[in-house]
Image (cartoon, rainbow, N blue to C red):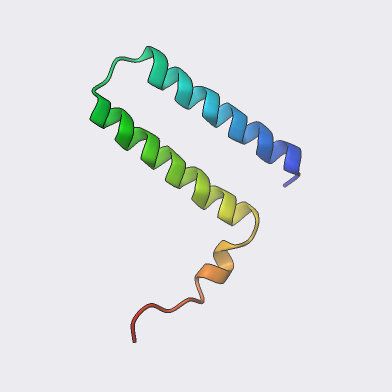
Length: 63
C-alpha cells in the first residue's frame, strides 16, 4: 500500500472522529471509549499494513 494512501486513510479517519466528537452529543465516557477503540483499530491496521503484525504472532507470553 503506498504511503500516500496510508496518510489519506489516517486523515479521513481523523476527520471523521473529530466530526463525531465535535457535533454528536454523547457522554464524555462514551466518547473516550469510542476514541480508544478507533485508535486501537488504527494502530492494529497500521501494524498489518507495514507487516509488523506477522512478527508479533511469533512472540510467546508465558510458558
